[in-house]
Image (cartoon, rainbow, N blue to C red):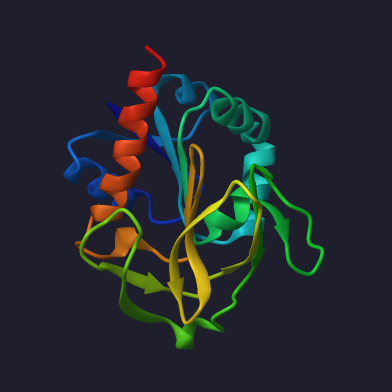
Amino acid sequence: MKIGVLALQGAVTEHIVSIEKTGAQGLPIKRVEQLEEIEGLIIPGGESTTIGKLMRKYGFIEAIRDFAGQGKPIFGTCAGMIVLAKHIAGGEPGHLELMDITVARNAFGRQRESFECDLQVKGILEPVRAVFIRAPLINEVGPEVEVLTLYNDEIVTARQGNLLVSSFHPELTDDYRLHQYFADMVERSVVANQ
């Protein structure tokens, strides 16, 4: 099973290491054609406006929408969550607009307000280690979105069908269980589409 990491910006190598701990093969995705080689895609953190501009420049917007339309799973972490969101608080234009959520950018403050904590994620038995760096929050969810994690009564992990998002960076810890959760989504998708 091959899971790609959009390699335009962000912690690509760290995501690949986490993917490979699940037993799947991790691949950096730098060209649209490479989407045909993978069964799942991670959109990593970074700066969402820059990621969006690069996605447009290199033709990834429609290609990733088509990828999702085929039922292939996508996991957006931090800025990747913003890129997947249908709505961004403050009226900022969206990017992929695939997931029925409204997100607030930098909801936890500046870089110096970054922190780590353990979070209970629905579907994972033990708490998951989470790193929040200038993290966004989910302000609103549509009716088909399942909330997986709250932090101080704020939504930080959610799922809608084949889409998974987290406000935090699971790849920056040795805890790869959220990547395993995603790999399991990808495996179920592969089996269902055979």
